[in-house]
Length: 281
Image (cartoon, rainbow, N blue to C red; front, side):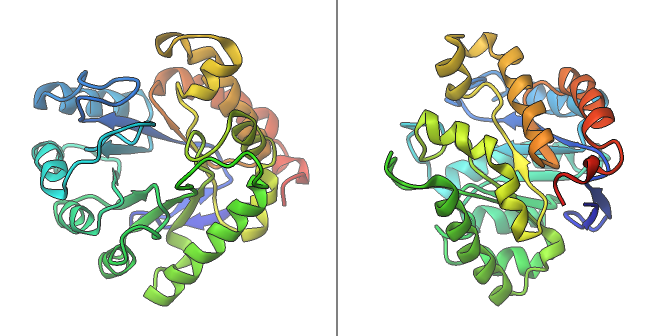
């Protein structure tokens, strides 16, 4: 089903083709590329490179959220983000997303030109986040998360209940549904089997009527199933992402934009032929 998605004040047609969100971590400790882009010149160059390769959005993170990460203050997070956002202002033609769950960081980032907030806690960690997103008319990627892994949890039911709470918060704050994307949160608060199920049962999330983003890029799930180290997980990542497109994903959050662009062009030609064959409503 095609829906107008207004993440950044520009109409994107979700469901028409798979959109790509390129990952830029300006952190010293991210699980895959920590330290690789924490210099200003390297970060700016990589953002521009991903745009040239076909990214529809650039998602910039200033705090690692890998398992076992050490949380940083809003001030430290902003010290990492501010120089990059300043340098990219006016240079990127695609919207910037900022990966943060802190309202103070979101407020500053949106004031400096970011258009989207990617909240790994779906508005449920910082009580001020919904108001910030609403006040700026920003787009929102709301991710499912759990404070602790519980193998006994029905992860699909848990995601649906979590997103219902997120949407109630968003509605109360005045965030338009056309600005919201849901992310099942692969690798966050889930066992490997729950991560597999989250991808396999993506169609269950379609009942909420919102676009879906999946980000499995290089994650431990790929290593768990394949035995591959982080630097060798591109084939498994693409497999997970192509299957996600078949299951109803509209946006993929990826490290490797060029390779994914080729993959999703093939996936879209097959899966979206005739409007997904009518299989995902």
